[in-house]
Amino acid sequence: MFRLVISDSRAWKNLMAAISTLVEEASFDVKPEGLALRAMDPSHVAMVDFEYPKESFQEYECTEPSKLCLDIGDMLKLMRRVEAGETLELTLDPQTNHLNMKLTGKYKRRFSLPLLQPSVSEVPTPKLTFDAQIKMDADCLNDAITDISNVSDQVKIEADEEKLVLTGLSETGNVVVEFERANQAVLDFQVKGEAKALYGVSFLQDMVKAGAASSKVVSVEFSTDKPVKIDFELPLQGKLTYYLAPRLE
Image (cartoon, rainbow, N blue to C red; front, side, top):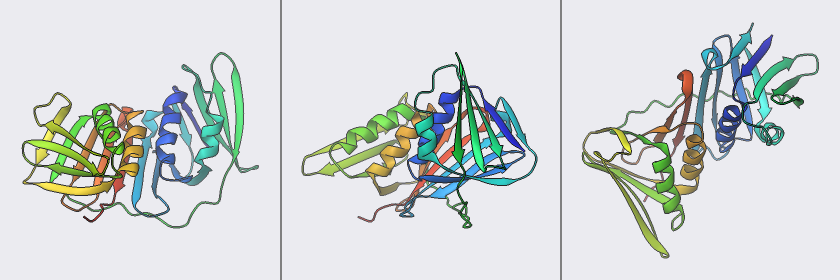
């Protein structure tokens, strides 16, 4: 048996939108302790790691571990018109192999989604160490990435012991955004030496924009020419983390 209730359906919609930035089909691990997903985009350049413990839900029931594979785009289409204050209930119908969705607000709405065949491949957790770890306001980082995306298809991220610098260069213009460690947008600043790397701005923009819709705080962790880890703090111990491989200059 599987059943969960989310008090804020918009929060779930935002999380599914964040996952959909990288994958169209999502295979969730459903366990008695909560939901989890780890998946790579088709090009294997980026990865999303999502966890939502049972404490994050208003109600959560799971009698045995299983896989829940869904077309995230189809779910978002059904949730396009969710309203503030609506609760979302998800239940699994093993007889029809469908996921049933019930939205309750001013009135009740019911939807059903067919389950897909889950992938057999498992994505391991990246084992990385980082020289730069900076916690900051998610909206400020989103604004910086958006400014750079207007002139460049890549962003250079640099950090030393005093500041974080994001740069975009192209024939149409240059954008440089600096966050000094004492900046009010910076909540925690830990940098050992210097670190710099180049990343695709479109991936980064999608990640940060999607994550900022669910969280006000983001942690950026990277080392020279290594993948960047973008980690968003979710309510009630939830986790939304992205990894993006670097580009070589």
